[in-house]
Length: 178
Image 1 (cartoon, one colour):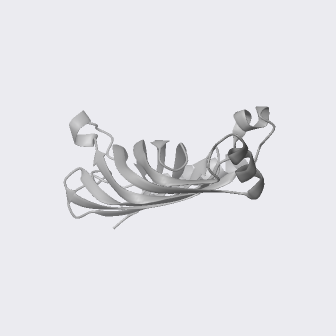
Image 2: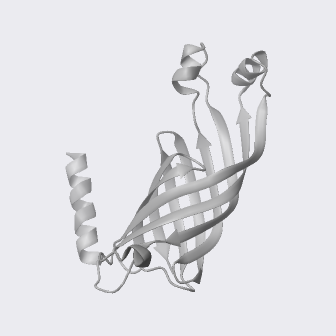
């Protein structure tokens, strides 16, 4: 029942907020803030983007994630989670014009960047890692490579989903365009 109610509310919001302008086109000077959650692991992420030219935005990405060791850790007799914080520059190229997409509310994009990542482990997991010859914590650079899509509900509000490396592999949330 809750799913039906939530779906109906989302559909009504989309219906009442949609306009006929070119909502999803990303242009020079546009400002966008994304706030999302990681799906598949506990996590949160945020990014800001500023349009430096039509279809191209640059900004900053940050995420917190608490992945678990999953099936591999469970098979090894360890199933501890750890904390991962990532931050770094992000660039996004919006593909609507290139792909000649007709839906004005839908935005397809690719994003990339280089992140500084810091992983920290609890004492039990740290001891396990050291017993197999790994360090008790990790930090360093990692790649941000994502494909994403957003759907504009109004001139300033959208929902988004992204898939790829950097933070949780699957992320979803809301976007605010200024």
